[in-house]
Image (tube, rainbow, N blue to C red; front, top):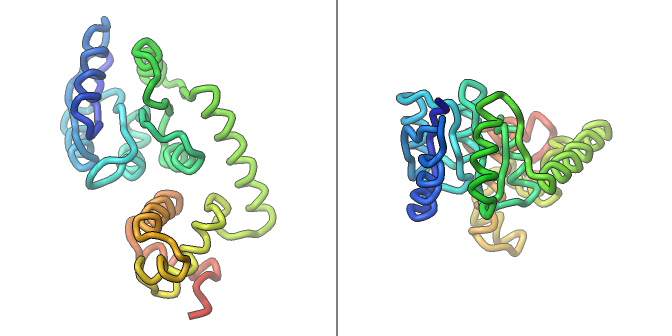
Length: 213
Protein backbone atom coordinates (compact mmCIF):
# COMPACT_ATOMS: atom_id res chain seq x y z
CA UNK A 1 0.00 0.00 0.00
CA UNK A 2 1.39 3.42 -1.03
CA UNK A 3 0.74 5.96 1.71
CA UNK A 4 0.24 9.48 0.31
CA UNK A 5 0.08 12.89 1.97
CA UNK A 6 -1.54 15.64 -0.12
CA UNK A 7 -0.34 19.22 0.51
CA UNK A 8 -2.22 21.95 -1.36
CA UNK A 9 -3.81 25.18 -0.15
CA UNK A 10 -6.73 25.06 -2.62
CA UNK A 11 -9.42 23.00 -0.86
CA UNK A 12 -11.47 22.11 -3.93
CA UNK A 13 -8.44 20.93 -5.90
CA UNK A 14 -7.07 19.07 -2.87
CA UNK A 15 -10.36 17.24 -2.30
CA UNK A 16 -10.59 16.34 -5.96
CA UNK A 17 -7.07 14.97 -5.88
CA UNK A 18 -7.81 12.97 -2.75
CA UNK A 19 -10.90 11.56 -4.48
CA UNK A 20 -8.86 10.42 -7.49
CA UNK A 21 -6.22 8.76 -5.33
CA UNK A 22 -8.62 6.98 -2.98
CA UNK A 23 -10.28 5.26 -5.94
CA UNK A 24 -7.00 3.53 -6.81
CA UNK A 25 -6.10 0.08 -5.52
CA UNK A 26 -2.92 0.05 -3.49
CA UNK A 27 -3.01 3.80 -2.74
CA UNK A 28 -4.08 5.27 0.61
CA UNK A 29 -4.34 8.99 1.38
CA UNK A 30 -3.16 9.22 4.98
CA UNK A 31 -3.45 12.99 5.40
CA UNK A 32 -4.16 16.41 3.93
CA UNK A 33 -2.30 19.67 4.53
CA UNK A 34 -3.34 23.19 3.55
CA UNK A 35 0.09 24.78 4.06
CA UNK A 36 3.76 23.91 4.27
CA UNK A 37 3.91 23.94 8.07
CA UNK A 38 1.11 21.38 8.30
CA UNK A 39 2.76 19.28 5.61
CA UNK A 40 5.97 19.07 7.64
CA UNK A 41 4.13 18.20 10.85
CA UNK A 42 1.95 15.54 9.21
CA UNK A 43 4.87 14.03 7.30
CA UNK A 44 6.79 13.62 10.57
CA UNK A 45 3.74 12.08 12.25
CA UNK A 46 2.37 9.89 9.46
CA UNK A 47 5.55 8.89 7.59
CA UNK A 48 3.95 8.78 4.11
CA UNK A 49 5.69 7.10 1.19
CA UNK A 50 4.95 10.04 -1.12
CA UNK A 51 4.06 13.67 -0.47
CA UNK A 52 2.15 15.42 -3.26
CA UNK A 53 3.39 18.98 -2.81
CA UNK A 54 2.14 22.29 -4.15
CA UNK A 55 4.89 24.93 -4.33
CA UNK A 56 3.17 28.17 -3.38
CA UNK A 57 1.40 27.76 -0.05
CA UNK A 58 1.04 29.88 3.10
CA UNK A 59 3.75 29.59 5.72
CA UNK A 60 6.65 27.40 4.68
CA UNK A 61 6.57 27.26 0.89
CA UNK A 62 6.65 24.01 -1.03
CA UNK A 63 10.30 24.31 -2.06
CA UNK A 64 11.48 24.75 1.53
CA UNK A 65 9.14 21.98 2.74
CA UNK A 66 10.57 19.70 0.05
CA UNK A 67 14.12 20.52 1.11
CA UNK A 68 13.32 19.63 4.73
CA UNK A 69 11.58 16.38 3.81
CA UNK A 70 14.04 15.04 1.21
CA UNK A 71 15.58 12.52 0.99
CA UNK A 72 13.77 10.79 3.87
CA UNK A 73 10.43 11.33 2.15
CA UNK A 74 9.77 11.19 -1.60
CA UNK A 75 8.18 14.39 -2.85
CA UNK A 76 6.19 14.72 -6.05
CA UNK A 77 5.54 18.37 -6.89
CA UNK A 78 2.14 19.13 -8.39
CA UNK A 79 1.78 22.83 -9.09
CA UNK A 80 0.39 25.35 -11.55
CA UNK A 81 3.86 26.90 -12.03
CA UNK A 82 6.02 25.49 -14.81
CA UNK A 83 8.63 28.25 -15.13
CA UNK A 84 12.31 27.32 -15.10
CA UNK A 85 12.95 28.93 -11.71
CA UNK A 86 10.24 26.91 -9.93
CA UNK A 87 11.24 23.65 -11.60
CA UNK A 88 14.92 24.09 -10.83
CA UNK A 89 14.31 25.20 -7.24
CA UNK A 90 12.11 22.15 -6.57
CA UNK A 91 14.60 19.82 -8.22
CA UNK A 92 17.50 21.21 -6.22
CA UNK A 93 15.42 20.89 -3.05
CA UNK A 94 15.14 17.16 -3.69
CA UNK A 95 11.80 16.64 -5.45
CA UNK A 96 11.59 13.26 -7.16
CA UNK A 97 9.00 14.41 -9.66
CA UNK A 98 7.37 17.53 -11.06
CA UNK A 99 3.96 17.71 -12.71
CA UNK A 100 1.90 20.72 -13.70
CA UNK A 101 -1.71 20.96 -12.56
CA UNK A 102 -3.87 20.01 -15.47
CA UNK A 103 -2.23 16.61 -15.68
CA UNK A 104 -4.83 13.86 -15.86
CA UNK A 105 -5.75 11.80 -12.83
CA UNK A 106 -4.27 8.77 -14.56
CA UNK A 107 -0.98 10.62 -15.07
CA UNK A 108 -0.86 11.75 -11.44
CA UNK A 109 -1.55 8.26 -10.11
CA UNK A 110 1.10 6.82 -12.43
CA UNK A 111 3.61 9.40 -11.18
CA UNK A 112 2.77 8.62 -7.54
CA UNK A 113 3.41 4.92 -8.15
CA UNK A 114 6.67 5.64 -9.99
CA UNK A 115 8.00 7.99 -7.31
CA UNK A 116 7.03 5.49 -4.58
CA UNK A 117 9.05 2.87 -6.47
CA UNK A 118 12.11 5.13 -6.45
CA UNK A 119 11.88 6.54 -9.97
CA UNK A 120 12.12 10.20 -10.97
CA UNK A 121 9.14 11.60 -12.89
CA UNK A 122 9.11 14.78 -14.97
CA UNK A 123 6.81 15.77 -17.80
CA UNK A 124 8.60 15.81 -21.16
CA UNK A 125 8.49 19.61 -21.46
CA UNK A 126 9.62 20.09 -17.85
CA UNK A 127 12.48 17.58 -18.19
CA UNK A 128 13.83 19.29 -21.29
CA UNK A 129 13.87 22.68 -19.62
CA UNK A 130 15.48 21.31 -16.44
CA UNK A 131 18.31 19.86 -18.50
CA UNK A 132 18.71 23.16 -20.34
CA UNK A 133 18.86 25.21 -17.15
CA UNK A 134 21.29 22.79 -15.52
CA UNK A 135 23.54 23.00 -18.57
CA UNK A 136 23.53 26.80 -18.32
CA UNK A 137 24.21 26.42 -14.61
CA UNK A 138 27.33 24.37 -15.31
CA UNK A 139 28.52 26.85 -17.94
CA UNK A 140 28.14 29.68 -15.44
CA UNK A 141 30.07 27.73 -12.82
CA UNK A 142 32.90 27.11 -15.25
CA UNK A 143 32.99 30.80 -16.10
CA UNK A 144 33.47 31.62 -12.42
CA UNK A 145 30.18 33.51 -12.05
CA UNK A 146 28.87 33.31 -8.46
CA UNK A 147 25.58 31.48 -7.91
CA UNK A 148 25.02 30.37 -11.52
CA UNK A 149 21.57 29.01 -10.64
CA UNK A 150 20.34 32.57 -10.13
CA UNK A 151 18.94 34.63 -12.97
CA UNK A 152 20.60 37.97 -13.72
CA UNK A 153 17.77 39.78 -11.95
CA UNK A 154 17.99 37.51 -8.89
CA UNK A 155 21.75 38.10 -8.71
CA UNK A 156 21.12 41.84 -8.88
CA UNK A 157 18.59 41.58 -6.04
CA UNK A 158 20.97 39.43 -3.99
CA UNK A 159 23.74 41.98 -4.49
CA UNK A 160 21.45 44.67 -3.07
CA UNK A 161 20.35 42.41 -0.21
CA UNK A 162 24.02 41.96 0.66
CA UNK A 163 24.42 45.74 0.98
CA UNK A 164 21.78 45.70 3.72
CA UNK A 165 18.94 47.21 1.73
CA UNK A 166 15.34 46.31 2.57
CA UNK A 167 12.87 44.88 0.06
CA UNK A 168 11.23 48.29 -0.25
CA UNK A 169 14.52 50.00 -0.96
CA UNK A 170 15.42 47.37 -3.56
CA UNK A 171 12.01 47.74 -5.21
CA UNK A 172 12.43 51.50 -5.53
CA UNK A 173 15.98 51.20 -6.83
CA UNK A 174 15.04 48.65 -9.49
CA UNK A 175 11.67 50.28 -10.27
CA UNK A 176 9.82 47.06 -9.46
CA UNK A 177 6.86 46.29 -7.20
CA UNK A 178 7.32 45.12 -3.63
CA UNK A 179 5.57 41.84 -4.54
CA UNK A 180 7.99 41.20 -7.40
CA UNK A 181 10.95 41.72 -5.07
CA UNK A 182 9.42 39.40 -2.47
CA UNK A 183 9.05 36.72 -5.15
CA UNK A 184 12.66 37.19 -6.22
CA UNK A 185 13.84 36.98 -2.59
CA UNK A 186 11.88 33.73 -2.04
CA UNK A 187 13.41 32.23 -5.18
CA UNK A 188 16.91 33.30 -4.09
CA UNK A 189 16.49 31.74 -0.64
CA UNK A 190 15.29 28.48 -2.20
CA UNK A 191 18.13 28.29 -4.73
CA UNK A 192 20.80 29.15 -2.15
CA UNK A 193 19.11 26.85 0.38
CA UNK A 194 19.19 29.49 3.10
CA UNK A 195 16.52 30.08 5.71
CA UNK A 196 16.66 33.84 6.10
CA UNK A 197 18.15 37.15 5.00
CA UNK A 198 21.17 37.00 7.29
CA UNK A 199 22.28 33.66 5.84
CA UNK A 200 21.80 34.99 2.31
CA UNK A 201 23.94 38.03 3.13
CA UNK A 202 26.73 35.83 4.47
CA UNK A 203 26.69 33.65 1.34
CA UNK A 204 26.59 36.69 -0.94
CA UNK A 205 29.44 38.49 0.77
CA UNK A 206 31.56 35.34 0.75
CA UNK A 207 31.10 35.34 -3.04
CA UNK A 208 32.08 39.00 -3.34
CA UNK A 209 28.62 40.54 -3.68
CA UNK A 210 27.36 43.57 -1.80
CA UNK A 211 30.74 45.19 -1.50
CA UNK A 212 29.63 48.56 -2.86
CA UNK A 213 27.82 49.47 0.35
